[in-house]
Every structure is written in C-alpha cells, then in structure tokens.
Length: 284
Image 1: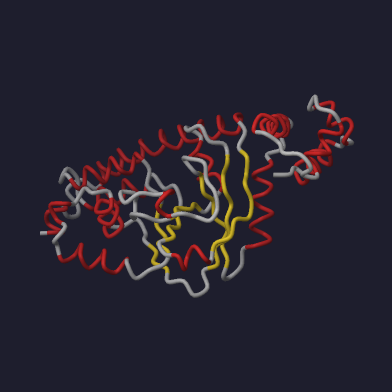
Image 2 (image 1 turned 180 degrees about the vertical axis):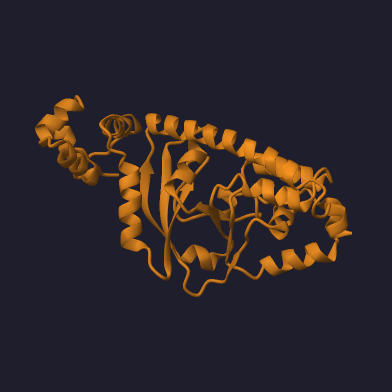
C-alpha cells in the first residue's frame, strides 16, 4: 500500500512541502518518499500516524476518497460498495471464510452502500480497514427488499428463528424465490433490529408494529452477493484505513443513532399497537 494520494492531498491542503510534512510526521524525508512511491512497506503504526495527522488537521481522507471513487466509477451499471471485515481479508473473495449460514441472508459476501456503514461496523472491533469495491450489475439477477413483512420473515428464517414454521408454504416459496438471484439488496439489520424481529417472531408485536419500529432504525441498504457470477462482477478498488480517532467518531455516531432509534421504536410500538397481524396469523 503506497501513500501517493494521501501525501499529495495533505501537502496541498495544508500547503506544506514534503520536507515540512516529514518533520510534522517525525520521519525522514527519505522515509516519506519511500511511502509515497511504494518503495517500502508501511506498517499499521505509520498508517495510523499519517491518517491521524490528517484527521487532526480537518482532512478526513476517507470521505474524500468515497466521493472521488463514486464520481469516477458509478454509472447506470456500476455501483461502489464497502465492506468492513471482522477478520483479516484477502482476495479472491471466499464465501465460506467471510460469512456464515445464520447471517441475514445466509452465506454470501455482504457489502454496504456507504463508507460510513462499514466504518461504523468495525468501530467496535480490532480492525482498521474498510474495503471499497465496484460491483457491475450488468447481467446479474437482483432482488430488492424494503422494510416489510417479507423482509422480516426472510431474516428470521436465515437467522434460524422460524424452525417451527420451516414447512410453511409461504416460507418455502420465499426461500425458493431467493435462490434464483445473484444479488440480494435489503435494508441493513443491526442488533436493535434483531431484538425487534425477535419480538415479532415471539408473537409479542404485530407485523405493523414491527415494520414501523424497524423503519425508525433505518441504516441504509446492504448488497449480498450470493453467487460466483456476482463475485466475478466485483472488483476491489481501494483499501481504506480508519484511524483510531475516526473510529471513535464512528462509535459516537453509532451510539447517537442507537439512542435516536430507540426513541422512535417506542413511539412506533405505541402508535401501531393492535394493528396488523401476529406471525401465527401470517404463517399458520
């Protein structure tokens, strides 16, 4: 990983020549040039130094990259997506190594539509890299969920919460239909959402209460690559380093989203009480 763009951006924004920048970073000019031109590997500690210095000076490099990459690569057929990995990640993409059967939609490669989504995801774990990909949707079969009963039931099924209903015709039809698609596009579900869906599965709230409560915790969409054909249409564009200070900001943002969402969920549950159907009514 070279730092050509990073060093150029920092130097130009702060109006520093490379000699001055090397002094600010407490490294030699030779070392800075080695990093810039990829002549010598840069470890995580030095990546942290460069990105933290930029962040402290109001330069959020990853926001800049996200904007530039989307401007360059997104069009009618291509979309830029992001992956925050729980564990060290390498190409080519391996379904089995990077997912499990009890994920939202089973085994697949999961990507978010913004850098922020992926950065928030790794803010609570010991990882610092967000991977940026281009997905070419040409020739791929895609299925898009919205926040609705079908989406809730699909997640509950793949999470293993509907074993008592696994022979239900509605579930068989839904899961059979999903097997025909290369990419599933669906709202992102987090721990708050799982708790709400669990209440729906446990017949504690109706589908209307659940749907409106889930909509109140909107986190954007995820793209789940389910086939080798979808993987073949995916290219790694950039590894984006997230320094500790940026992770701390993401963690604070995550807490704020959680608190705001919790209030909206309470209101939705009260407002839609006794409206809609319980899961036993839907799947019986």
